[in-house]
Length: 344
Figure (cartoon, helix red, strand yellow):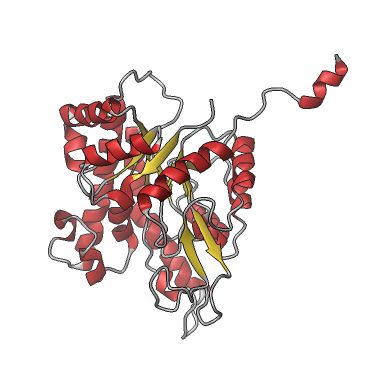
């Protein structure tokens, strides 16, 4: 059997949990990657209540769905970020609190630790769970960054300044990763502009900053790498032992009118002048067969999670089409050498 195809619920958080379960089942998905916002997955309840976790599983099971990961990008973003009024719009009220930046960062770190506990309790309550699951418990998310704003800056930014940013990341995230280790849960950073790691080189630097902590890996997403010009297939092979989860998301680039570059020109998505934009799977420029081959080569056995984003397309149509697309391009690796038959 090929890998499970799941739907990330972050872009569907306007729907109640039961409704997105119903829709995802109708779209053809095997399961959900649960966002920790909306009413899809309550971190505080899940961390302390078996009853709550069992109820989530019951609803999933009623719709023929499973789950392999939860995602808390919004809270993770605040751990290392320079906090401003935009964060208030995405953070839980108890994390935002009085809005004092350092206090927000500390509360975000505490909430991310609670997320690890919630993930462990949730996975422990998985129906039919074996002592050792085939796919480990994973929390996907962001880290934020205290130095992203200096990515291409004037006055010029020194390596000493950037080193301080990676040290800040290590100081804030090492205790979080230690807490994840106690819960036997992996943290998978979605490598992404605005995060401490946004390409291959910064991903290596982030790993080094936390001394290659075994709980720190990546939620692979080609869309955030490709339009930057980063080799998104090489990323898989370079971090073969750190791909803890995989997003299927498409993007196109070079389709604008030449007035807006890779930085986006302070325009909204779907502006026809943009150099790049997210597209529904199969409608962009990502070579997904190359990705599947590379994931097979490294032995990735986890889900292929559709993160559906396309401002030009009806999302129900797109989510259904995307599910079919992933099933069509995924395949099991061979367990024989095709040319061995000539020796018989």
